[in-house]
Amino acid sequence: MEKTYVFGHKSPDTDTITSSLVMTNLEHELGNTGAVACRLGNINKETEYILNYLDIEAPELIESVEDDASVILVDHNSPSESVANLENATIKKIVDHHKIAIQTSYPLYFRVEPVGCTETILFKMYKEFNVEVTKEIAALMLSAIISDTLLLKSPTTTDEDIQAVKDLAEIAEIDYETYGLDMLKAGTDLSSFSIDEILHLDAKQIDFKDVKSIVNQVNTASINDVLEMKDDLEAGINKIIEEEDLDLFMLLITDIINSNSQVLVLGKSASLVEKAYGVTLEDNTALLEGVVSRKKQVVPIMTENA
Ligand code: MN
Ligand code: MN
Image (cartoon, rainbow, N blue to C red; front, side, top):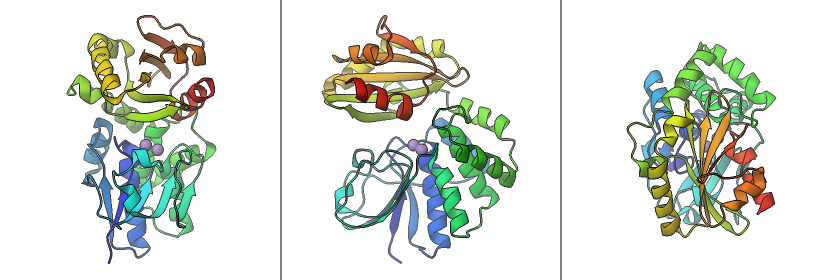
């Protein structure tokens, strides 16, 4: 059977990793035994906690795929977030919940829905294809929805995500509120990372019209703990701005308990953040009240004001 690489985006998060596992299992169940779960980067602390808890192995790390390889993309569709040589591969399927950012010269299975998590879509697909959602698969799906929606508190959360969490918690036999908080807290432990690693953990390159930007997000249970590293973070950010020739770097330090973000902003277009959110940056930083979602509360607002 021809190999099919199944992977999510670079700087993988829990949805990306679990979706590659869950999509691969679906492919196997549907007869595509050549499907292999892969990842494009290191596992983060939150995902590590989940995989350890469930005793599941991480997908295979890859850097590129061979020319003409078959690939399935989950949790992303933007080529800039994908495998380096995507243009030489054949995309068989995409299952995602982000804005459409790809064009192909050939038809493919393309499933994008405006829900809080890829796993919410995959849960529906399992039902549509009559494939059993085992306890283990349910736990993976549940973990990703909790992660992407910050325990159903993010504005990206839809009724479908809420229902999926309830149904999956039952199948997985997990008390999702307790498990979810433990899981999210495990993801906020930055102690073993260097400044450079923190600045690349969940970094996305996004252009707000002509403003070349990176938006990075770290979750925390205490904004002040992260701000203790402010001087070092700024030095690291300035280095990245220079290397990548950026106009703007936003580091969102997201308080998962109170659902706010402190934003640290550097670059010549920093005033765009002030304009977009009606805040004044003091020492390059400001509190963005109620902002937790990069996708829903940063990308559209920044693009509109750029
Ligand atoms: Mn993701
Ligand atoms: Mn996702």
